[in-house]
Image (cartoon, chains in turn brown, yellow):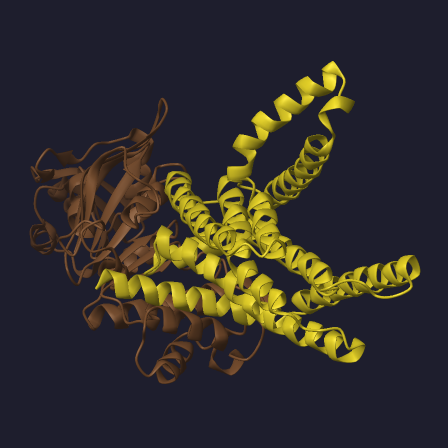
Length: 315
Length: 276
């Protein structure tokens, strides 16, 4: 649905985006991450045809914008980080204007639906200059959804929202994705990306460093897996028994808890558990410590780790 | 298909702006001021004529005030055009339009037709105003008036496309407004000075003035094609001289001027992009 081939944007000597090749499949929620100045917004602007690339090309629905500009634009919904609204209008007038622009059928009914989705229907007759930042952002989302687009491109969709608003938007995005929409989200709120996205791409200094599913990304970054075991009682026999296992890197005891670090090549939980039992211990709980997206993000961007092969994600 | 989508985008964008203009007070305030100025010119010139000759000896006393009011209205709409694009860019609202099915051509033409359609409303008010003056004063409502009114649509088109080009060229509203006012004032002053210098009899000219005259005349060969004020003045002269071919040339050249300026605006807009 969204494809960029060696997309590059240069401003004189500065390369804002360098040879970016992205591929977002139909029905996918794709998280686009990167620190400030990584080139995310520049990429989005090129996707939308608002900035001409220096090199490379963008394809939406398999076509470049120049091939079928109006049809492509009618099939995408965009929410920017900052909401630029006609402040002298009410929400109803604003959405009617965009409804007319996109030639939305049964526009009043559709406006009722989208304003209901973002919980602004009761405020529909208020002037937009009186709206709070969060309300403006939700109205922007309503506008992006109004024409029922197949692709949603969202730049920081929850940056101005309170926790209730964030949950509302998350629920809307999940619902829209279940209806088959492809969603491309650029965000700094990594916990949201982690909860909603099927795949993520991480950019830094204009380059795409990693692109993978959350699970595979973490697997590739983690050299060791940390397991926390809660036992009825920790004995020296159990500790030494575990240390003898070839895949165990370290074992630490804290009261009736054991922190066991193993190699990350396989899932060793079963063998750990049976070793504890064989040494006379009783396992009350076993938890695998997952690397968060935040940890993965920091690891990749701080070290500028390049996790892509020429053909795509590295194995 | 893309032509119909483009036409639709032009229609929707222009409609929103017309609505906003007609529901605002700015247009009505400016129109009232323009009509006041025109009434002042009308009363003043009539009284002066009567005082000089003892009778009102003027074939069409309404044409001069009408000419002034049409000129001021066209200049006002040109000024609004010079603001329009720079303001949209400054506020960021332009970017949101381009997320959707709007391209450079539809955006520029939407702005152009907005101002031109507002001018038709201005014409309607002007017609009512001057017809009222004609009825109240018993001064005839001649065919020249209709001629001026029709011609003024094309001349306003020049002024609006000139304003749009300046607006596209500037990133800040204040720059485009200052540019528009400065250039229109310069063209107007140049035109007056040029006419005055050319009107001086040859035998009364000093050597310096002969050089000034040559320089001004050469500059005029260039300025007359780029100044919207010149298109306006040439058209009105054709009406006053009752010159149908001059009138036709004025209409055609105004259309060509508009086309060239709008094409330039689209080209420049594409180069500048929509971002703030």
